[in-house]
Structures are given as structure tokens and as C-alpha cells.
Image: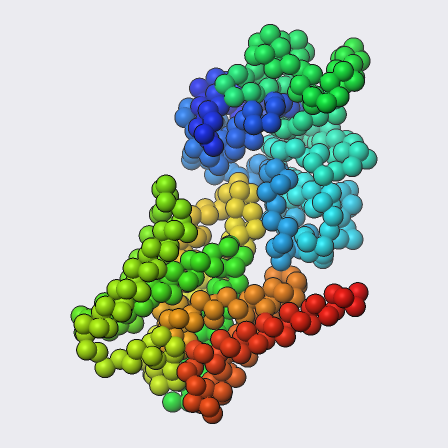
Amino acid sequence: MIISASNISIHYDKEIFKIPSFKVKRGDFITILGPNGGGKTSFIKAILGLIPFEGTIKLFDKDVKIFDEWEKIGYLPQFSFTKVDFPITIKEVIEMGGNKRDLSKELGLNNLLDKLISEVSGGERQRALIARALANDPELIILDEPESGLDSSWRSRINKLLEKLNKEEHKTIVLISHDLTNVLNLTNKLACINKTTFIHGNKELVLSNMKEVYGCDIALLLHGKNEHIRKDHWVVREHDY
Amino acid sequence: MIIEIIITSSLLAIMFSLLGLFVILRKMSFIGTGLSHSAFGGAGIGLLLNKDYILSSIIYTAFIGQFIENIETHLSRDSAIGIIFSFSMALGLLSLFLSNSYVNIFSLLMGSLGGINTYLMILVIIMFIVFLFYFAREWKNLYYTSFDPIFSKVKGINNERVERLFLLILSITIVLGMKLVGILLLSSFLIVPPATALLLRKNIHLTMILSILFSLISVWSGIGVSYVYDLPLGVSIVLISILLFTIVFIIRKINKHKI
């Protein structure tokens, strides 16, 4: 098992999040959904041992509290936390992640390597952070909203890259996303977290039970504003399966 | 005498500029101020007990540095440092008042050429060797954790260890700089040269070199000015470093408008 978690409760920012059980197998592509403030990022941080929690979390069958094989994990933190005004070049940002895999060309960064992070656009910065997450050729890839700051063309290119990593190289991928329609084709499992309600499992099961199980309306998950359009969009996509 | 002054001040300038750069990058400027005022409290204790006040100051300041790292309460770190800082100042002043010490309070507060002797030089040289080993080993960890502490943790870097070690080295270096620039101006000497280098927006390697350069220029010209015009050493050094900052700032502004 790549990730296994049981009886997790996280007390964070005056909120309580509960996850009764969560399992990720080798080669899984799991997308974590949920409304803003629902606990997606906190859950991921707990999995990585970044914030305190109650319960048991194991990474590669080892308790996260004593886990030390970090080179197996690639992580993209949430976009907004990046310090833009820092004397670091794009090349150095990527090197932080390791040097086993150079994706700078694929991610359109090869002309920007010597630029400071303050000198590139938001989308380029996000691509550099994605390159950093993948730089050590990790077995487990955890991405917190990789689509932030990217235009639709780059979004689909990143999705293709993730698909390749998952399907051809059998990497395990955990993705936090707000845009289910964008990743529905790629993912084989879904999870949804909204404070103390949590569900995860195969994509079809989660989609059909999402509303009943914990009152999280799929249309809301797919962003409130374009509720109807998005919902239709999703229904069409679902028939494809 | 002159050799002692040149060696001591140059080595201190190098250490201060590099540590100061990371103090800024880690947004710890107020901790720098807190530690430099703690140095005064520690020195006061030594004077009161009639012991080596540099040593007492190193012990006290290093303790405060580690203590700051432990503050995780309802009290924000900032206010806690504020309290420690005023307590240490009061402690230092009280000790000086009670001890009838021969130490000139002005030279302790504002630095003086007369304060630099062979003993201090030897301490600074030892510290510099320790610092070189420390910095060669740790700078990448410092750099990464300053930029992105969350990602660094996932890369297996123990940020708490990095920060504790940094505060320890910083505390000792600050105390050793006390006689050169004086308590009141230690934090400016720590911050201004690297802040000047950061204005130029270069990569980290160039920023480090520029910080060292600005710091050395400030110290050397400060010593000259202090000697010729008989001004307090710390005052000359810091005023020159701020002059450099202003010049670089204006040049940056002009260049920006040109573009």
C-alpha cells in the first residue's frame, strides 16, 4: 500500500476534519475533491506529516512519523504559498526537488532557467513548481491544485503528462483539484472531503454516492456559478464510461 | 593593533553579511534585534559577576536564541521577543549601574576601536572557522527552508534543526560583533548590507558576494572615518552602510525609470 490512513482526525485552524479510512494502491490515480475549507489541503499535509493529527498514517507501509524515504515522494504545495520575492532562479527551484528527471523542456521552462522567480509569470512559476515536484522521478506524486495559474492549453498538457506518468510509468498520483471535469478521464479513484464527511473509492461509486453519502452536491463541487452547465458537462462525460 | 582590527572586523563583516542575508530571507529581522539586545543583558551579567563578559553574553544570548525557538503560545513570537529584548536591556543597564565597572558604556553601546584586542581576534578567528564549516554544510538547507519550508520538510529537511543551529551561530556571532559596532547598532549592521545586495535582485550566489562586499566596504571605511574624525566606530560603520543602501536604492530607481 502506498498510502494507508485510518481514524484520522485533524484539528487545524479551529476546524476539525475526520477521515475514517483512506487507501491508495500502487498505480492509483486518485483525485480529492471538496469545497473550499473542506479540508483537502489539511488532509494532504497530514498525510505528509506536515501538521499534527490523531490516528495512523502510513506511507509505503511505514508510519509517517518515522518515514524517511522522502525521495520517493514528489509534492506540489498550494500555489498561493510561494514566496515570489526571493532570490532564487527557476533552475534552483527545480533542483530543490532533485535531479533525476529534467522536465524543463516539456514544461516550457528551458529558456527561463536562469531567470529569478520574481521575473517569470504566475503560470511559468507554477510549471517550475510542477517540474520541482517531479524532478526526483518520484513513485508517489502529490499535487495540490496543479491547474492554478495555468491557461487551458497548459492545463491539458499537464494532464497529458500526468496521464503518461500514471498509465505508462505506473506512478501513483494523488491530486487535489477543483475542476473534476478536467481530470475525470485520468482518475480511477475519487475522494471527497467536507469537514467531517469523507468518502473515497472507485470513481463510479463515489460519483453515484456523493450526494447521498455526505450531502456534498456534485454540482457544488464543480463550482457553484456554472452549476448547470458544469453538471451537464459532467453527465456527458460520465456517459463516455 | 591594526592587524587585530583588520582581521577581526573583516571576518565579522563576512559572517554578519551572510547571516544577515538569511535573517532577512527568513523574515527574522526582529529576532536579530532581540538577540543583539540580549547580548547586552548577557554582558551585564558577566560584568556584575566580575567574569569574562563576552563569555557570559555568548551563553545568555545563545540561551535566548534557543528559547525564542520554543515560544509557541498564545503570545505571538513578536511580542515575546519584544519582552525579552526590553528585559535584557534593563538587565544590562542594571548590571552596569550596580557593578561600578571600568567598561565604558558608550563603547559597549556604540562600538569602539579600542575594544578590539588579541583576545577578541582569537575568538573571532575560532568562530570564523566554525562558521565556514557550518555554512558550507548548511547553506543549502537554510536557503531551501527559507524559500519553502513546507516543501523542504517533504524533502526530509528538518526545519527546526536548521533554525536552531542558525540561531545558535547567529547568537554567538552577534555577541562577538558587540565590541565592533556596539549593541545599539548590531542589528543594523546585520541587516543593511544584505538588504542593499537584495535591492539589486540577483541570484543567491551574487547576492551573497554583494552582501559580503557591502559589509566589508562599510566596515573598512567606517574604521577609517572613525579613526580620522574620532567618531564612535559603530556609528560610522552603520551610517556608511546606510549611505551605500541609499545610493544603490537611488540608482535602482533611476534605472527603472529609464527602462
